[in-house]
Length: 106
Image 1 (tube, rainbow, N blue to C red):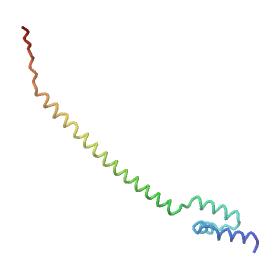
Image 2: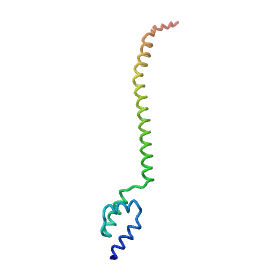
Image 3: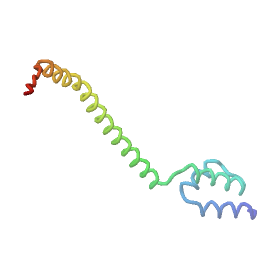
């Protein structure tokens, strides 16, 4: 075994399991290959905590979307009812007669 091979094994042994797995799948033969594959794995693989945070954020976005849909439905219903209310008021006002007021000045 050469020194490069021993160093490569030592580097592989020191990697986190999910990064080591990726590097081994890439069949890294040199130390440079191990480092390159390790950097790629580190940048592309997210931790469980970040996945959980992403799921929570996705759930929060979905809840906000549902609330917005409810609000849009409520506003739409209000707009559909608004002309009816205005026509009732207009009809009631149109039946009022204003008689001329005569002022007697003495």
